[in-house]
Length: 548
Image (tube, rainbow, N blue to C red; front, side, top):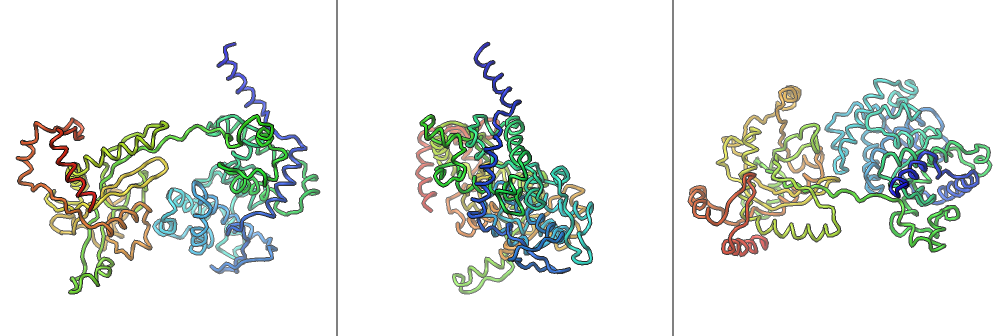
């Protein structure tokens, strides 16, 4: 049998027979040592604390005695677990803590969340990223209110039942197998497995699993069955004899995740402090000098680099005040009085439903996955800088064309000021945003923005119109604004319009004719290389441009 075919057969066999299951003796050690370690070392996180809801009140108070076993608080704990687990998807614990506390204060129960507007929800989430999570939480709240009933309406009408089983929990918008398992085990003490990034790493090292954790079949045929076997096929009598806790399944799952987050970390793991080192095959292999480090686990293929996008956006502002005599002293106050025009991103697009400055996509480029990626990126950025001055006018022209099509401006004969650019990285996109600005002029910027916008929302959705809104600097603090918009706005305030001389519109035609022999454009509109003479001139201009 050829070696490749043989390897495939071995992999198939290992996936089918679950050769990575723990023995009963290993399970006993794992449960005993993990729960003991977790209870002694777990972090004090707000969603792990139990709370007591006051009857038919919005207020919550800490229940430090941990004796509140009522159904009301059980389901309230489930709501907290739901919120925290959704927030923790793709986001670090340290970042989530403040957002969680603010969220629970604003939406203390699932009924409060269901009554909130979408803008209130996304505003509370603003800065946390991945805004679809917030929208799914909002949808989940509405779903629960529609499908389920209050736990005890006489005691508290705001706390609703949440489903306890993994199957029913997975019916909730945005709730997958992991989140359902976490809620089911942590809130309702069900023997449901959880497998997240931390658990992948812990199990990979404990059993020296050489399979790629990013492959779905590996996840479903190795990791989930191993996790399930650990929590379901274990002697309850043995567990109760070796551990003394009411939430054994929740603590076990949280213990696995906590171990991966604090001890069995990706780089420089603290193996000497690990409570499971006695049954860890990777650690034993390092001790026996079979492998150099446990860090080779888990096996995971290299992540695809984010694609590169070039964007141009316009900050259109409206001065609502008269200029003060002492402009320097009053400049900050003037900025607060200015209004800025935003538009709502279409649903289904990046940052859909969020307010953003009007923008257009200039170019898209897929990143190369190679070892010299950073070096290549630096070279690319240098090339871009060399062409930047000449391209600003082209970018401005494309932006005006898009805004004209969107009925944002009524003519291209409107003055735009160029400020600078910022870079922002999403999970799968690296955006370079060129920032332009203009002062509102009713003859040149669409004047159909008025106070009746709220009344026209539904009509706008039906006819596909873009929803726009004036906001002051103060408004931005309480509005549904994503992080990238905050970065753009801060850069706009910091960076005054660039003073580099532009070609006048009357001279553009003649300059194009004179330069036709030296430069040309391809069919897609990208600028080709110039002659060395003109390039030197551009580079001398570039140095003055960059030093401003």
